[in-house]
Amino acid sequence: MTPPIPRPALQNTVIGFKPDPPDAIVVEGPEPPPPEPPPPPPRPEPRLTDSPAFLLLVWTLIGLVVGIAFTP
Image (cartoon, rainbow, N blue to C red; front, side, top):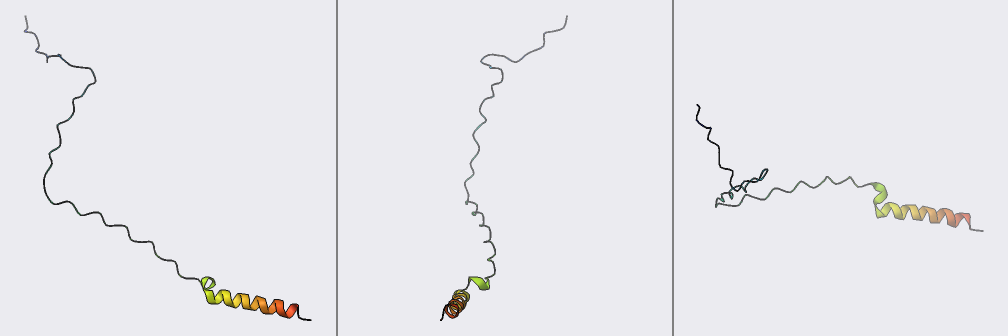
């Protein structure tokens, strides 16, 4: 007759229950440097139509055309 197979004790065991893992070991030391921020996006090249001088020129030409058109 074969001896019985030893089995682990099933006391206080819930099927599907896993005990909490042991706490992580905290190592004292210098803090890691913060991650570098991403570089800023490249600035778009300025357009001629965005400049105040261009707007002044456009409105001056519009004023001249309207002034000449409505001059008796």
